[in-house]
Each structure stands twice: as C-alpha cells, then as structure tokens.
Image (cartoon, rainbow, N blue to C red):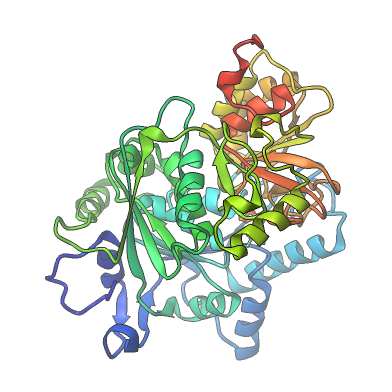
Amino acid sequence: MSGSAAQNRPRTLAEKVWDDHVVVRGEGEGENRKPDLIYIDLQLVHEVTSPQAFDGLRLAGRPVRRPDLTIATEDHNVPTVDIDKPIADLVSRTQVDTLRRNCEEFGIRLHPMGDKEQGIVHVVGPQLGLTQPGMTVVCGDSHTSTHGAFGSIAMGIGTSEVEHVLATQTLSLRPFKTMAVTVTGELQPGVTSKDLILAVIAEIGTGGGQGHIIEYRGEAVEKLSMEARMTMCNMSIEAGARAGMVAPDETTFEYVKGRPHAPQGEDWDAAVDYWKSLRTDEDAVYDTEVVIDGSALTPFVTWGTNPGQGIPLGDAVPFPEDFGDDGDAAACRSALEYMDLEPGTPMREVGIDVVFVGSCTNGRIEDLRAVAEVMDGRSVAPGVRMMVVPGSGRVREQAIAEGLDRIFIEAGADWRQPGCSMCLGMNPDQLAPGERCASTSNRNFEGRQGKGGRTHLVSPAVAAASAVTGHLAAPSDLEHIHA
Ligand SMILES: CC(C)[C@@](O)(CC(=O)O)C(=O)O
Ligand code: SF4
C-alpha cells in the first residue's frame, strides 16, 4: 500500500479507505516514506489500556478532542457473576473505578457492568452500529481488527497512541502493505469461519501478515454472515497483520441498518452509495496474495501454544521432527511439553476438563446459537465444567429471549454475565494449573487462561461437542449420542 497521491491508479479496498482519511501525507516514497497523519472516525476504550492515556491528557491539561467519537466499556477485569457486588480483586476494582472516573471527568460515554450495552469492546461497537464501512477504528487492543469485517481499517494501538487520538482524533501511521487472502469454494457443513482463520494462520504463520492489512476475499467469504466475518477479522492479528478487512456488501448493510448509531433516512442512502464504492479495483495489485481452498477445510484445533500451531481435528499431535528447521522443531517440542501432549496422539483422543464459550472472537448470538444447537437435549460430560459467557448485555438478553440460556443450564453449563472472562487470566474466570480447555477464544499462549492452564482454540460447535464427549470432538461425532 502506498497511500500514494495518485488516487486515479487502481487501488485496493484498504488503499481507498486509507486515502480517504489522510489529513497530511508523509513525504517521500517507498521505504523512505514518512508517516501519514490519518483521521480516526471512532476510538473504543476499555479499562486496561486507557488509564495512562487519560493521565497524559490530565498532565497536559488537554480535553478529549471528540468525546462524541469515543465510547468506553468495562470488559477485561469484570467478574461474570455477582456483578451487583463490589469487585473482589483489588487490581480489577482499581482498573474499573479508574475508567469510571476518567469517563466522568472527560465526558466519555461509558457502558458499565449491568448496562445492557456493556460487554466486550469488540462486540459492543458493531452491535450499536458505531462500526461502519469505510471508517478508521482504533482501540488499545490488538483484536480491534474485528471491526474490519465491515470494510473499515480497524487497528489495535498502544497507550501513547490512545492518548494521541483522544487529544487530536488523528494518528501518525506509516502506510501498510496489502495482502489478499482469497478463499475459494464453499465451507462444508460444520466448518466455520473460526476453522477458516485457524487454517489461514497455520498456513501463513503467526508472522505471515506482518506489516500488512489483509483483505479476505472470494466466494466462501462473501457467503459468511457478519458475525462469522468478525470472527475471521478478529484473529488477523494472530497472523501478524495489523488489520483484516472484508469488502462491504448487502450482508454488511443489512447488519448495520437500523442500529442505534447507524445513519438514518437520506444519510443512510448517501452512506450506502459511498459504501458500495469500497471495493478493490479490478486491476489493483496486492503486495502479497494467498489462496485457500475453502471446500477442503475441516474443523480445526490448536495443539500448541500459539494460534499458528493448529491442525485439522482429524489429525494427530505432530512430531517435532515433522518440522524442517530446528527453530520450529524446538518450538514444537517446548509446546508439547507445556501442553503435556504425546506426538502421534489423535486430537480426538485429547481429553478436556473445561469448555469456555465466549470472547470477542466467538461470543455473539450466532455463536451461542451454534452451541445451543449441539447442546439441546444433551449434557456436559461428567468431570467437565463448561462456562458460557455472552459477549454483551444485549447478546445475553437475546439468548434468554430465544431460550438458549435454558439449554445451557439444563445441559449443566454455567451461564454467566458479559465480559472477556476466561479468554484471559485477568478476572476470576481462570483455569487451574494443568486444566485443559477447549476454548472459543483467540490465544493459547502459556498461562493465557490462568497459570499452567492449557488452551485448545476451537469453534463454538467443536467446543459444544467437546463438552458433551469430554474430549476434542465435532458435532458429527455425536451421532451416537442422541439429543
Ligand atoms: C491482554 C488484553 C488486554 C488483550 O485484550 C490485549 C490485546 O488484545 O491487545 C488481549 O486479549 O491480549
Ligand atoms: S475477549 Fe479476549 S481477546 Fe477479546 S478483548 Fe477481551 S481479552 Fe482481548
């Protein structure tokens, strides 16, 4: 991507959105190009990465430049039970109280625990219609890439950049390269966008997208729902990319229409006219191209301690010697040791202790429906504990309206309040040392879900089937276990 002044040359979607946001173009070309000053349409804020940013404003005596383009929620540190009681953990309570004080002082809209608009920041933005095609969206959180599902440039930023955007509504950024990930064919029944993104990361590696904005294209992508597109874009960061995007289409417009902050009336018509222009030009050139056959994909699971260490559920734990260069072989050996897995073990024979359904990757209503479809009339296997955590108050409300909560509770799962929960060990929902979890989240690093916890990243459907069988499984394995 050059973000070049020559806007009449064929451009990719990312280049078009970028060019529409350049306030001042950096001098020079190519490697010597200085950063552009980019306008930011929306900043999302949560309690973990905002305290220092607000302190910086306070010290400089600066107000927030555009409070109306800023929204905050409590998600990482919040408990998912007893939310009407004071937060027990002192660090978490301090984080949340600090966010509340900062939002009060700087006039930022905050959705606190108990508010139906509260939830994980990357579930709340789209749900409110704040995330729209063609926008630039930032948050002090690497999974901001989620919002690229709408055809926006959505990036995680650091705390000093959070402060810069609060103060100026702009960011100094060097243009990124562009990568096309084209998914041909059609995803087979039982194969979801979570399986697709895990396969993409396994294919290109956790550094494959470094320095790029990925545009996901192809007939398999066009058939995905908005929630499925968000799942895929959410994990672009796990492939090293700064952002992931899908060109906006009728599926996108349908999702945004009528939401609380979506354009209305004539503004809506004008917005859709612009959004329809946000497509890569026929003869535009990407810096990198990857093609994946969507029809060949099967349910995917991770075996290791980074999202790139994944394989089809039907495969077996790899042997370190399967990896060519020593680096990967050593990484495999160390991961297997932490995960306590024997090379050659079929993934379907890996027993689990915990199932976590939730996170900004797979905590939306469509994800809960997929879990309920498998769990309905079935039970969580003896010895397994399952936690289902809605991504927001509205998702929780919708799930209750559809009776999904009853299915989870009757199956023996723990139905919770919204939050990041067991996605990361920053709140009471954690794994005990040595516990093994089938998790719908996006990171399986050592200790991610709690010290000594072992994480297998899976889709909601695989999580549900694993809860019923007590080992990693897909819904197709349940034929003999009748609902
Ligand atoms: C650690 C937490 C704040 C975070 O949300 C940070 C991030 O994604 O950048 C994560 O999921 O790792
Ligand atoms: S759900 Fe997990 S990945 Fe998403 S923002 Fe929260 S902690 Fe980060």
